Image 1 (cartoon, rainbow, N blue to C red):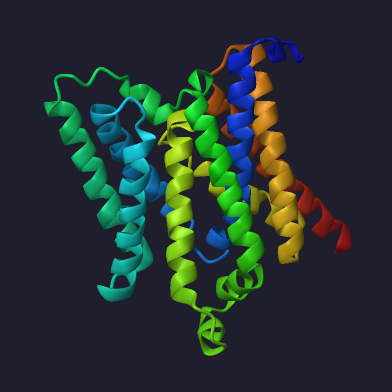
Image 2: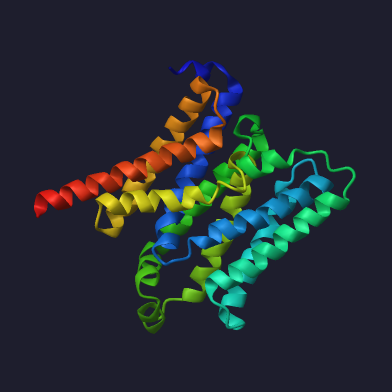
Length: 271
């Protein structure tokens, strides 16, 4: 069952996927429960263009894609605050513009010879050492951010009005969370794909909320489900010769259905 440990590229893929899953599961409840989960999907379109631009000018696109995506994330936050746009509208404006820009760049760049499919659905089995380093730095940044600002993030997530009244710098937290989400998406988009990366933000909290009630248990349960789903997805994709990213999402979906049915069964027993 674990014969894939004999291959270095599979070990790299597993480590990268688990780092991405862990970072995403830490960010997940603060984004999903504050109704900002769409930012991950929007950032995926933006990261797609960032990687495209990065591939044109560098052998390691992260150096260009990361700052490009961070600037876009800050622009989304700025528009939602200053331009009287709803958060989802601001995400839509910036992400659609970025995606259109990326497609135009691809169409006019004769030297662009990378597979578009690999950017859309990911290529986890071609992980590079710089990507592993980037994922490790991302996980560390997310851990430090969540640990240091945990209580402030908790209050801001559930009651932003009270958070402002109590003196919490909600603007800084919002911008910082957007920037970290941008970094997460860029690091994950080449491995998981622009079409699938947002699922790593959505599923952990959606699954955990079916079977938990408190925020702390939702966070911890989400982390567990995220890591287990990612590991099982990689194992299944290896043995069944399936694409890795989509297989991980299928495992996430199976856990969500199971958690939903478990919740319904428990409610019936209480009644």
